Length: 72
Image 1: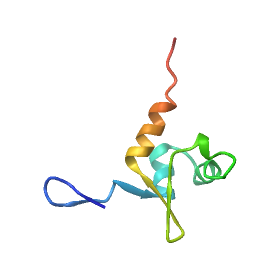
Image 2 (image 1 turned 135 degrees about the vertical axis):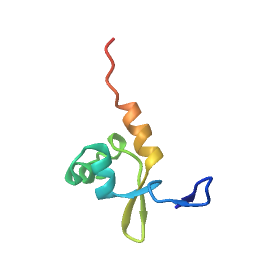
Image 3 (image 1 turned 60 degrees about the vertical axis):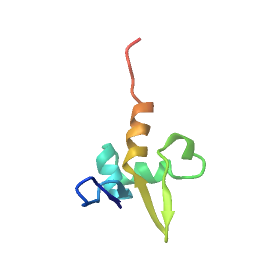
């Protein structure tokens, strides 16, 4: 967790898979599939910590930005 300017920990900087899926509007199953070795390049970056999958909110936001569809 990070400390914000008020000296309070920011619990939203890191998310477990279920919270990340909710944040992205994806099912937990779809997010899990994006972690599979053959699809990792398509999904957001993640870390494994003691067997738990952890996402940084900044990585999720960046991944969403790269997947925006714009009219050309």
